[in-house]
Length: 160
View 1: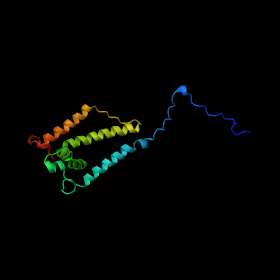
View 2: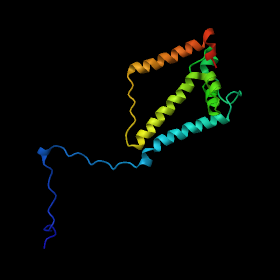
View 3: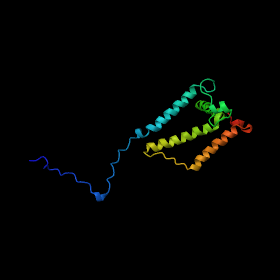
View 4: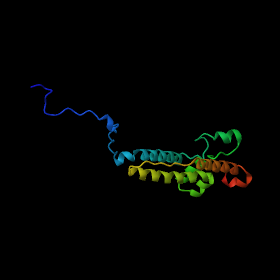
């Protein structure tokens, strides 16, 4: 008997009239795998805050000086951010707000977005934050106004 004359029929050729055959769906990732990226980002942020908590930015010589402050004498929106993170990591919210209030708001926003990301990732849904360009212009305007006001005499309370 010939080997080609077996009992199983040959696979049928795809029907060109039926259209393209969709690729097979990948197997869903496990919950642990879906949470790996948010957990990794959290580990990096906790490590950075841990380093800033351990190495005091209030003591000179540990961190480089802000180039904008050094060359222009103007506080940028990030000036005081390390001192703010140091105070925040030690639980001193008042000192953190005094060093850079905008940074503290950024910490809170990051925490909220991270929680949303982790919850959505655990449910197998992607995190999509589609902000219209107007929102980004608004964020830029807030940073600009914050920078200008903290460099004026009446806004000295916002200076680090």
